Length: 457
Image (cartoon, rainbow, N blue to C red; front, side, top):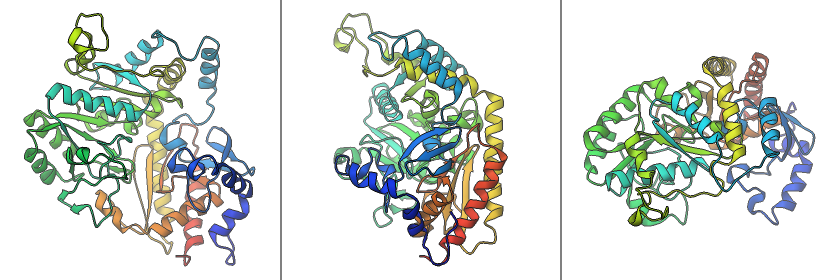
């Protein structure tokens, strides 16, 4: 929808989504904010989707969109991939979840262990959040230390110990070289705030100094090789390599959160950067659009999940594992089957093609917006990107403070009006079904959307 000079982007949005508006008013009576996922609630009201195929989705009002978000990178093959659809239909006929493990777990585990350099053995979970929870618990059990470190701007799911300094307010965050540990929301246990140490992303000297200062109590350092929620900012290779060296020196378990970055190389960001962690957490793409998480690492670490000869699988005192893992839907047949199909199709050639599309998109958008009156920077790596309104350079999390928040939201709405989906914060990705024409469409849409929002804020 082209926006006239007499119509704001918000007014145009409301005009094209009246059924979504009505649905929002009704569903908000039973679901807070009208959405189970907080990310899916935004003013003036969310869009509600009904179907998707490839990278095109349709909303309640019949509007179609090119989806450049793919459920926050979880769908590298796009919506309703025929091979995944077929695999899921076959699996449903023989059961979705079972009391005991099924043989498919082995196939997906072997596939991932063969690809990801850090993985000797692997366990599946119900989500990426659970994968991180167990990975950090494993590090604590192994080191017998109680604290963990994470990067400012890093997002690792929603447990208390990692919902710290994800997007901290500037007045609370402290010095850039010594960030404070700031709880991300109400209800975070204060003891976890004290036991979560924050380091500045891409700052070698300051991060190393902080780790050394707390080394006697640090069990793990968890890092996203590319900050996701923190702006799709790639790490410097030198930073990751330095953190590897410091962790080795101090006996700290290095954990890479590759829930998002596993798609940038067959073996994930650790293959791309040539830096191997002790434990890797995974999710999103390894489930092929179904709920899943996984964590894997060195055999000696993963051995803490093995029983020790007793019959009580719950209790280490009577022979059970040092670290017990539960989960009714962990390793469920649907997620495993979809994961096998997806990861088999997402081979080295497919990832090379994905990365080329991502590079073309970032370059095309940068060129398209060069003459617009609103500053915009594109960050990302491989098939991942993020649009930042109001800033000219982004290298660290603190650089995001320069973003024009009002115009960032206006850009999100303006792109919806033109039939393009990204995250409200500007995050996006490409899929195997994304074409050159799709990328050209998106670059034009960004250019025109920036023109639409000029003078509105």
